[in-house]
Length: 311
Image 1 (tube, rainbow, N blue to C red):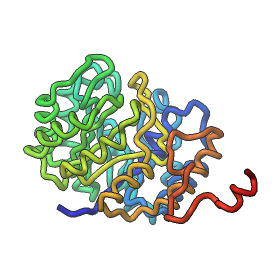
Image 2: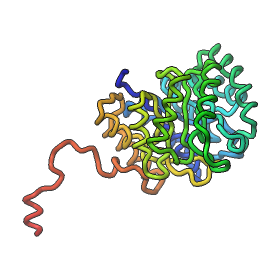
Image 3: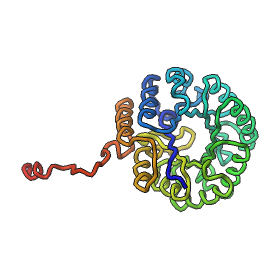
Image 4: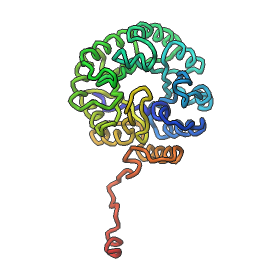
C-alpha cells in the first residue's frame, strides 16, 4: 500500500467545540490558516449545527466567509442533516462530514434521531452533495464503546460500515468517541471493516482519553488505514459524550507514523508552532507533548560544558 497519509486536523471544530469561553472568529481563522500553512492536507474548519447545542460554532458562516474561496478545497465541514448540507452548499463547501452513532442512545443524544432515520437520510445527502461537487464523509461514532450502552459489538459496527459504504459516501470512518479503543480492538475492527469498505476509503478517529491514542493510530496504519483525524495540540472532546477528553494529538501521532515510513505533507515543526499559538489563544496548556518538547533534530539538547560549569 501507499505510505501517504491523509491527515485531517479537527481542532477548529472538534477541538474547540467543548471550550466554554467564546473564541473570537479571528482566532479560529488564525488556527485554520496556521494548519493549512503547516501543510495539513485537510482541516475540519467548523460545523453547521444548532448554536443552541454548540454555541462555540455559531459563527460557522462568518468563519468560512473570512477564510475565503482559496481555502475551500482543503476544508471539511460537519453537518448533522440535510439542512446542514444546504447551509454548507450556500458557502460552496466541497467536503462535508456526517456523524452517525452506532448506538441508538448516543445517536439520539447527538442528533436527536434514531440510527435508522440517520441512515435513511444519508442517501439523499450524498445525492445532493455529489450533484453540487461536494464529497461526503461519514464517521460512525462510539464504534468501540458507548458511554450510555457500554460495549459495542464489532459485527454491529462492520454492518453499519457496509451500509454506509453502499450509500456511496466517499470516506467511511470509525470513531473512538470516548477513548476506550485498544490496539487489539483497533486491529480486529479494521480487519472487519476492510472486508466491506475499500482500503482507500477507510478512516480512523481516536481520542487519547486513556493515553493510547497514538498507539491506536499506529496500529490502524499497520492494518492498512491511511486516513486519520487528529487535533493539533491534542485539544478537544465531544460535548455529548461524558468524559470524552482530547482528540489524539496531530503532531504526536504524525511523528510516530513518519518514524514508520509514512509520508505526509504536514510539517511537524510548523504544527508545533500552531499548537503554541493555540495555547496562547486559549490561555492554557494543551495535552500534546511534541509542541512542548520540540522536534528533535539529532543534535545535543544540553551543552555538556555548561552543565559541568554549573555543577
